[in-house]
Image (cartoon, rainbow, N blue to C red; front, side, top):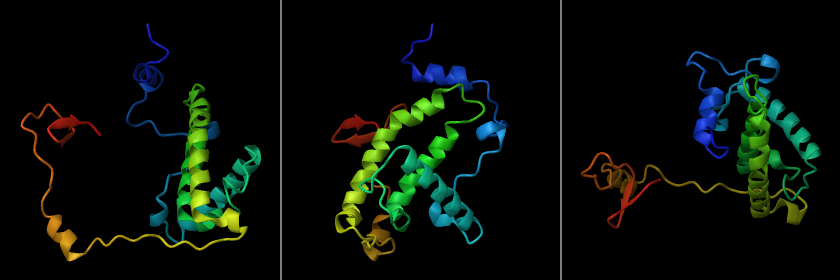
Length: 178
């Protein structure tokens, strides 16, 4: 008998009959839109992705009555907020698939408070709400081609485990998974 708390068994019972050729379907059986990495968008896909996200964010803010302390009016100017909102958009859309028996919306809503808190923290960090105006932020860019890094990167710098059955990281003679 399946336990209500056994996620692996529940997932297998729900989705185990899906074959590798089964395509993901969006709402009402329509093919799901692809998920993009924002940094990879080109001039063809960017306008479509921005329009879809903008419409979804408007719906999201109105539906959940979110204040500017969660989603500032200038949300689209902040990559960290765009990334979080896009992840929420895709998760919400995926939760209403033709193959979902109803757990998707529940899973979305169970995770929603965590995402709202992340948005609140990001909004507070960028400072637009306290100023009541957009505040330009600069990303911290780490050098990936510095000579010191390139010299360091030629070695793995991780101790090899003698027993291949143990997968994880060795930290001070203790096996840590993660």
